[in-house]
Length: 224
Length: 268
Image (cartoon, rainbow over all chains, first blue to last red):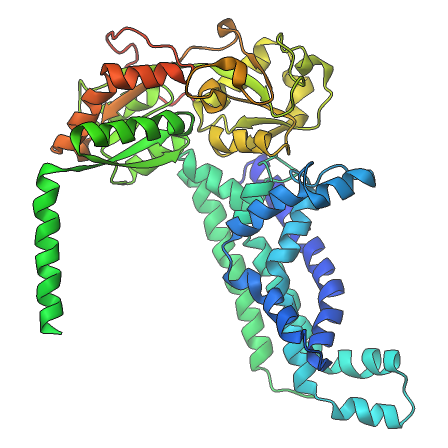
């Protein structure tokens, strides 16, 4: 039912979503934590910047990435200087683009979870002699576990569904940057509608199952 | 409130009345012809009062859109097969096909001196990315693949190929320097006054023997069959003003002849 090319696209998409989600959790956790505790005056600026990909068309992101990551761009010059070459048309470039694109989908659930847990448990832990790192890893993170689940599912699913950024910086290379959404677009444009149906229906099924799982996780009675 | 509605009706009537004399025509244009079409549309508007709405994309993409009911009235393809197929499928008006330009494939780099006048750079492999248009849907992409094969470089170059969804995106990859070089249409890099010496970067005009001629046909689509502005545009494209613009972008003009292709299977 699936061609080799489509199978490669699915594998690549899953790898991209996994790498992006992992990177987002690493970057997003401290960022969300900072947003949830800080009283800094730049907090609204940072929160707004994190939320930007929610409202921007992916083409804006794609365009600036192409310019900035390219050989004449600021980041492109840096990556060339440290021997990485330029990022457009590479898997690494897609990870960078996807990370920016999916950032709010990971940071916001985490931030909400940290805020919902409140300061009290942390203050109790502090009075019991727990240091800041100890408090973060043994109190704050476990309390925010539902937030981590939501962030992981949303970050992963949103990256699977990414299209515009990849189309602009990917270069449609089989096995390297031709992800599922682009492969589907190709099929539609070439009027290979049977192939398009298989991929499109598969993506609907996947997304629905992911969101259904999320709903049942959210709906389960909290045991915290 | 009532007055506003009334004003709205007056406005609508006015628009209807004015559209009777100054018409509008929706045109689907292959990406390589986007530049010349813009200038032709401006002249056409000046000369006839008709307004042209241009949609640019890869030929195959536009074909799929026409098949799915897109409101285009005139189609300027980058090949001769697609208009013939549309005619065969009764989506285009029979007998209105004509060749408006013959395109030239070039290997282009935004960097001066990077592409040598004989195209030997392709064999040296001193680059990471070679941009082409998606050969499945873009005739210039198909021509690029053909030329690469004719040079015997398919195996060597395949891992370096990045695809734009149209020849427009392929050119953009090269223009931003993200791909060191790429196969695009001469019309995309030629300054409109035809002075090839002023092309930015470096280029090699791919010899015509390396790929099948890119004869670009236009056709009146069914949706434009009863629109005088669409007919006027088709005529205008055959006229001296349009021809001068087309030639200035580096296209060859071919004498009108009976269409060579019968409707058939896609061959992108």
